[in-house]
Amino acid sequence: MVRLEHKNILITGGAGFIGSNLCAYFLENNKVVCLDNFATGHRHNIERFLSNPNFTLIEGDIRDFETCEKVATGVDYVVHQAALGSVPRSINDPITSNDVNVGGFLNMLTAARNANVKRFIYAASSSTYGDSESLPKVEDIIGKPLSPYAVTKYVNELYADVFSRTYGIETIGLRYFNVFGRNQDPNGAYAAVIPKFVAQFMNHESPVINGDGNFSRDFTYIDNVIQMNELALLTDNPEAVNTVYNTAFGERTTLNELINGLKEYLSEFDAAIANVPIIYGENRIGDIPHSLASIDKAKQLLGYQPEFSMKQGLKEAVKWYWEKKE
Image (cartoon, rainbow, N blue to C red; front, side, top):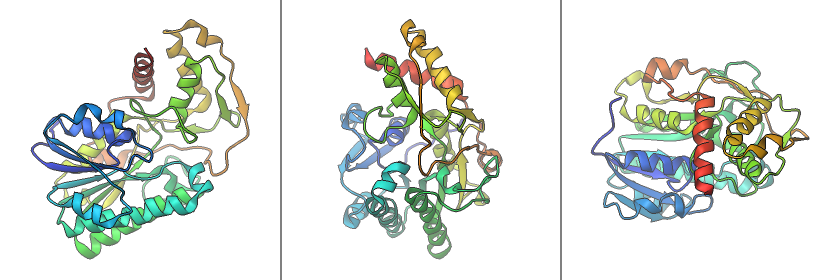
């Protein structure tokens, strides 16, 4: 695949899970500015970059417009990952989620426009599909949001569209579907399900599945997400910009299938994990039952070809967590 080269790229939320993987990838051929306030990101994710002359870390908050203007100056592209994720977090504290995800997004988008940035790529979310029951999820058919988080991510798409039409800045939103892989934090109250389950299994603790385990998700390995971000930056097809794309693998996996896969792959490192029992709890408020992406639009307009299936990605992730443990 053609690589983006010799550009100045701002990655907001660059010390987070997805952001730090994007920093690592784009640093190979470009200069990268990382903006993070370390609310959910971690210094250890970017520590190895600090000695790289092509890497600049700026500690700051997207809720501060002056900071946004400072970091946007002189960059070719903005890859906006900074946000407060998690549906439960937004239900517990909708005001902060809105301040960061809507106010911060608007700050960053405005700063990018003022700095004449060539293109603004941003992390959108599959939560935007809300209560729409149609499967697979197609970009132009959405339902009503089911959480404050989903509202904020939909508002991002609306702002991006308005800015493209009104000011001419090129934007592309990537609706992430349950991304997982290296650097994803297993700790904290709002840890994603895969790293949380992995950590529990490695400690011989029983994971708790919300519901009966038949809810399904389109789990997406981090390297597929990196590919989508690069394709979004590289495209010179006018029809491919100022829109949104599902960023997924395009297959559905139930939580029961996920947990069995994790058990199988982790048992190769520790046979006792095969005997760890699973606990089933209540369904979680704001959760959609099933999620499956159509990736036809990304294939057609961006040339997207995901390299890692759910199982391939899960094997890679399990290996990474195990090696990190040791």
